[in-house]
Length: 634
Image (cartoon, rainbow, N blue to C red; front, side):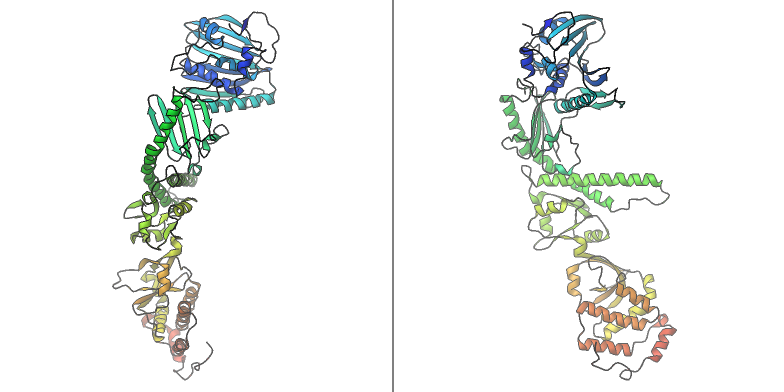
């Protein structure tokens, strides 16, 4: 017996269905706005390719309509399956979602004053008007081409209530229909609020919020599986409707893209740390429409998800991680370049825009690698640490990324890291020293997690790049360098030569460093060195070593300025300062020899000896005559 009563006269409608089967079924729906899912489902079962949902204000009312371009309904369809509870025209049809014959009654869950149904097919249209007291009118709407159905719910709402109604309708569509297999568009028009109408596409591809995922399609069933670890590094869209998808674990079950059940709370054995979705015509919802039936199809789907995690997902992560590492390395290389192009090459505004785009792309690549790296270090997708590749700040032998870092840093050797590529990392790469690029805030911590026993050091704190100043730049300081070299020799701390250099990386504050002298020099010296080796060598002034004065040092800069006036005094004082820096307080013999040297300085060679130097030599007292007596406080 049909639960609706047919008559033609108008009368006031009560706010809710009277007691009876309709009211009882309305109470079965956990979410009153699930009526939108039921109407979308009906359209999809009718073969719709497009479904339009519209929420708008009318004079004194609110209208919520769902229009599809499906096959429409005949009079027999309306008076039979549509208006009769527990009778479904879809029973036994595996291509249809609805089975129980109770879905349409859900339109009364939000207590509309009236529900209008317009449907047309085979050149004939029908109009059905349902009231909240379960009475209805059905009338011939005349001829109409094509096919389709429109269901409109009419309510009297205040403007504040309309805004809330529109919000909940949007949330319901996003929750229940976001993976629908047909196009769904939602428009909201608040004509009384003087706001612009909005249009939103609801349907989105079936995907999970994960750093990497696999999709498998088997016998009309689609599986999408990915790890939750690392996904928080990605800029993934999140909303209240899909918040559960960003949980530590997530499970979603769908039929033709319509949500049957989603959870971040219910843990399934063996799937902790996994986010997955299963869409299958074999999965069915419960009578209350808020859960998935736990039948054989359900448990078989879970078993297949576990297999995908253990095999294809881990293999996919292992295959994509090297690509992500190389991409992150390329991002770091670009980050080391200047953001602005040369003047005149392009308009300034466009140059800044391009620089911003590059920075965004570099950041996305670094984040994508960090996300995959964390997934590779976390169960159930953890990989062997020696198989995990890391991006390099500068390519070593053409490799932008390297795995097996533990073998590259044997014993107590540290793992070297840098935020970007620079001249130091390039020099280290040429020497075969890999430097891990850490251009994402999480990379260092993840590197330590991968190798918990390893020591991690900044490349710029552990190594230095020494670049000798070209000869043309050293000519003005020739007299100073000669005095320093001869002063050290007279003090029995002779070196092969003295030169000027720039230091990048560690030990940048030192006045000078000692390095092994070149055999045959064909140009300015440039090399990188471990800081600990340079420090260990610091006090060993030997003929086989060259002394490089750091032009950025305050001590050297002051001596260079003084040398323009008095290179002898400047050179002797600088030699003394460098010995103090390298050896600490001078012993009496070193101090006496330097004081004697100050009293009788060596002659300057060639053009470097100017008139001021000659006058200084003429006035210098003979050794033992005017020099400071031995034992003077030093």
